[in-house]
Length: 238
Image (cartoon, rainbow, N blue to C red; front, side, top):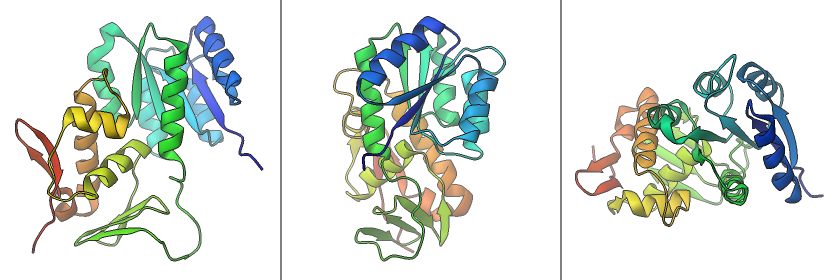
């Protein structure tokens, strides 16, 4: 039986919600709407959506507030919708847990492609129940990645990551000591070939380190900045 994909479109402009709803429903997705931040948060906490398209500037609560409060309880993939003049807020959105952003005015087709990409990358990010043996484990001192379950543990403690944070960590960890520049990471992790803010990578790395550091300083140190180039995953020898 085919899984029903449900997406929440949150924007205070009805015409934008309706436009996105038309294009997303053409792809077979079930689309629900929210017109302000308070309604968005209420719906997002009450139901498990596969993805949320979240306008940055909304009444009641803005996108930053919604993301901060939602991330305390859920890792639902979030694509932020922002205006060109909201660059600083966009970076803040990444720091609070957004997975991607799209700048207004946008092409509805681009939105559909971004949604498909984030759904593809986040498939299976909900921890699996039971104690089945994983077929794919990436194991290092202080850090284990169970790719079948999309579960990360550092020094025996589970680390709660957004889908994009997980994909970034997994991509780096698959090639220890190999340095990747930001452009390459944007292409491989975000699938951006010719567009995308390089700070997208920086903010995700920062947030990833912070989350790892909360449970294991040694695991956090594995994400290494190579100044003037990019980032690499370095195995800690102790």
